[in-house]
Image (tube, rainbow, N blue to C red; front, side):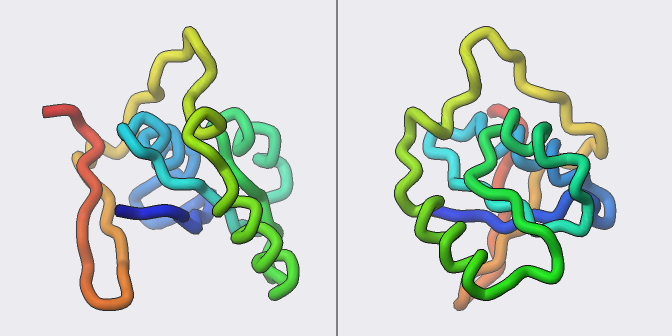
Length: 112
């Protein structure tokens, strides 16, 4: 299980906001920390329940604080606001990759 995910806004073949929105729909969603060079997406990041929004180059102390805050995020805080529909995955992908220290895995984004 993933506890915390670090995302950029713009990634090859994916949009970090879409990934965060889909992760938020998981039964046990991970906390999301954005690490990006784009300052104008901060409000949108918190609309998809990001735990933190860090600007590149990321300072070690800022990352440490964001990781501590994300670790304290409870399940209720990670739920999408009532009445909001999940955003559609624009790239047509059914999964995203995830890296762990010992292996590469995939998160399914589509139900079923």
